[in-house]
Length: 280
Figure (cartoon, one colour):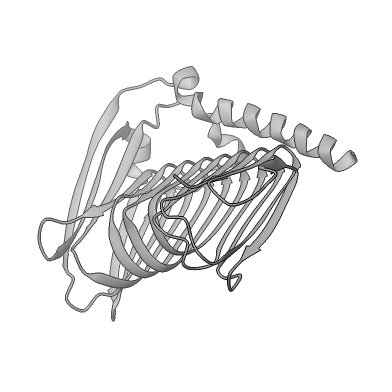
């Protein structure tokens, strides 16, 4: 019981802090904004690993129209912020490192007295297979709209995460606060969210998939009914619903079932939140 009370209290605190952070610029903004535009182009021939590290900005990964890797930084920010933005892109052997930082501020600086504005970092990748895509973001939305990778790793502190039309052998998504949406997914997935809903839509269940949420509903949709699998679904506070599978009791707090070879495993766990797993 104490665990449940603590989780609810933490959720209330986090929501309050998210509200302050989200609307802080509308409350505390003064001063004019200045335009930020920067572009860098790299030949993709010898590059098979992309690592992106961002302080505060929206990150978008999308398909390039040619064989080059194109990096765009655009936005409107305060003069003070513009002077302290540092976009550093380095090519080290077969790895492209993209680092966007701004001046480190004191802890109370998240209540700004100038208009920070908004920044978007766009990385356009050619249509080829990359070994790894790594994204680490402190604050801001992360969107990966296409791509083929061996491994995908996305880590965010605060911000929504969207991955769609991403082909990978393994993918790991970790978020402290924010919704996670994965569309048309294939491969093995490991998703961990402290506070936020998870929407995972799989083309097929062919590899192990694990979803863990402390606070938030979890929805998993599988486009094709698998012939072999293990389902391990549980929620401490919330309802577990299962549709489209050969299961007599379609809801409860916990559902466990095996079929065929019992592989792969779909494991979904939530402390506070409903869990829905369905097939067409």
